[in-house]
Image (tube, rainbow, N blue to C red; front, side, top):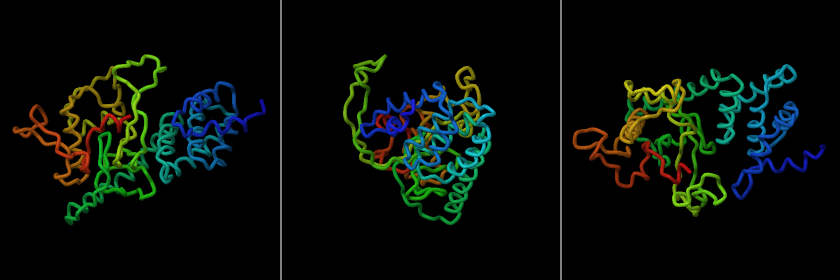
Length: 300
């Protein structure tokens, strides 16, 4: 209708933290027949991070056609460079989704992750050989975890994402501001007794995995873990059907693989040396640098 400029500001993530309006707009762009080439031009010219993310999410909904395939291929090359180097963890996550799930660049994305992970493994091996003392980073959480290498190899102090030695990507959250935990009264399917909206503040920095632990990653820890192909059909699907004890055992295993000293691991085995009844979560484990499960507030 010739009024796109008056709408464009609504694509920016709002200060009040409610992205509903921008989400509706992003979802409608492909449906109403917006020119994807125009969105590509906007992406290249747009300096604001959340708008750039919105454009890429919108582009993921457009079917590829000959009319813009060349533009898409050209942008894909640029996006792979951004995937490797851009500082913003939100943009990094959107690029992962777009390139891997929509634009058939999964092999290229995996190659970048593998390269970054190899750097981490080299650093871990060097610490083990030479006995270097790691510098504690921020507290970890599974799917979560900031190991002792923050800023991690391949990352820097001003880049809030990194890849660990298992090729898992983590977003660093530095001392978040207060936020609302729970759900609004208008949310469909809400269970009031379980989801009262209330203010919450996390006073520590932490990092959390950008995706669930996959079947392939969990099988490195427990090769005989039973697979439920009906729900997780391939090795890139989320690992499921494990006990809480197995999950925390994976966390400690991951800490060991990443070269984190045992005194920084978050869970203690029981008297039989197993992760089962009688095991303990370490005192002050939120201050340790080992991998762990996220708290409810961190997950939210």
